[in-house]
Length: 176
Image (cartoon, rainbow, N blue to C red; front, side, top):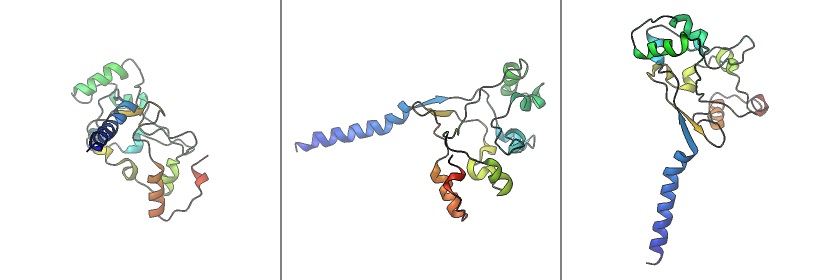
């Protein structure tokens, strides 16, 4: 009977830590633009690589620059408040949106998008899910200690895919 308060205290502390630690370690950073992948994919026929392109050398160019967006949105194409806000805040003043990145990799990791996309014909959705069907960009959850996001790809994801596809590359292909 004397152990009951101790066990209850331990369980309470574990529960509080389990619920509180993720909230304490991650800060939420919303995206600067209310963007719909679905509208761009369905109505405009935009493909992933129209905005998220690879450079000539095969490295990933990252998030789209303002010039990509402003090519179509120098003037309104629709009547949504989100598009008007984008034009007023970014396109018209020629101000680059400060996108919050979801998947910054550690400095010792090189993820070759070109090999996966061009050579192995991996579809974007295989790693990134149904982003093309989303109506709103989720906020990025940034780890206050490491600087990585909760969406940063985990090594086990790569290992599982390589195992499933019988790929036995050396660890040094991606780890530099």
